[in-house]
Image (cartoon, rainbow, N blue to C red):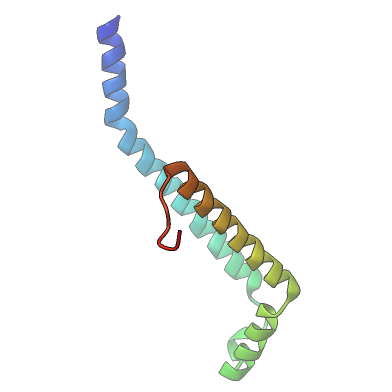
Length: 97
């Protein structure tokens, strides 16, 4: 029984990188599909005729949208939370701490 358990464990370890690679490939494929869909959804008629100045004006307006600012703040807060949890869990201090 012990030999069977050890063999099963060794087999699992041997195939773990393969499973991780397959998970990565599936995740990568999903991200590519999501990106393609987002790009298709974002295109509007006439986009390719915009000048650099018009694109810049549109980009600035988008980035000044309060909903975008809230999203960026939420992302920054999440990153700060994750970093804080990592530091606390490892007991590692930052250069400033």
